[in-house]
Length: 193
Image (cartoon, rainbow, N blue to C red; front, side, top):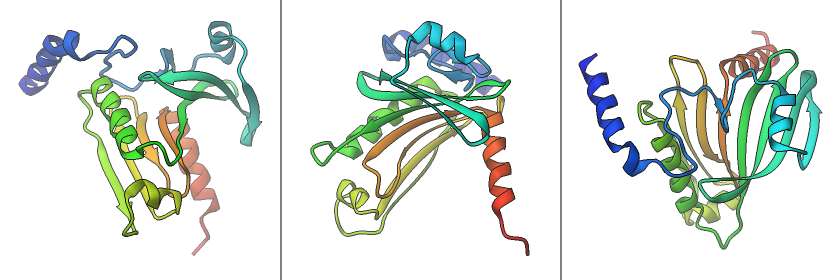
């Protein structure tokens, strides 16, 4: 308890020096881009206007995509909604090419989330199965990197990832409902022993 009070006090003292103009500090992962989990898609449409793309995928999940930025970096922001449950997932997707230092981009977005969720310790995993530099290995499908923040209070998570073979960095926010849906879907496709 005293450690948490100390961490919170330190956070409040450092807050003016570390929080960027676009970024707010949060103790819990409770939504995406200022919208709480469960927000109706109509509320987001009223706030953000027309999406650049709207799709319906598995189980009537609606996904709306908007041009956006995260930490002053251009992105596509995607909002996913379950029927009757509202917002369950948000994601910033940032495409990059060989001219971009993907390691620096990853570190920048990881730092963004470290500042946003200072009380949640991330789990980091990476691999490079090539003798090439990380970004070249990603392009060839031989490297990947993920940092994830698991919120034990809300059951939600946030993560930064670069997947092997995909020259794209994703900053993802998932509600507990979305995580449970993914886990159920994975169990349903597992072969029976």
